[in-house]
Length: 83
Image 1 (cartoon, rainbow, N blue to C red):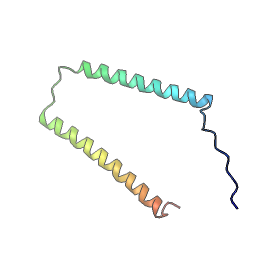
Image 2 (image 1 turned 30 degrees about the vertical axis):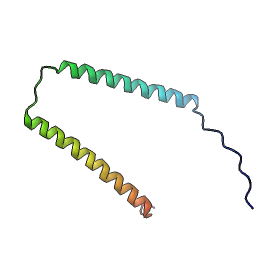
Image 3 (image 1 turned 120 degrees about the horizontal axis):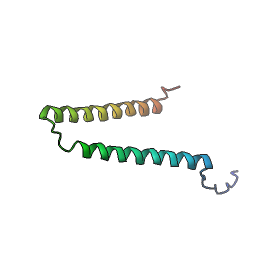
């Protein structure tokens, strides 16, 4: 016979969790502020066609590498290869 389960309380964040969240949000705010500052400082800079090509290639290769590695992680977990 199955015993009735009591409804679980939602997990509440501890004080350390809230502090960590605040610090991470602070890092995000500072990095966004700096990115906007640098973007505006480079308003007069021009990039050649080669620059745009390699920028796009870098983004595509980085995303493909990340997706491939994540696919391998899920594949190995599903087939019990990570034990």
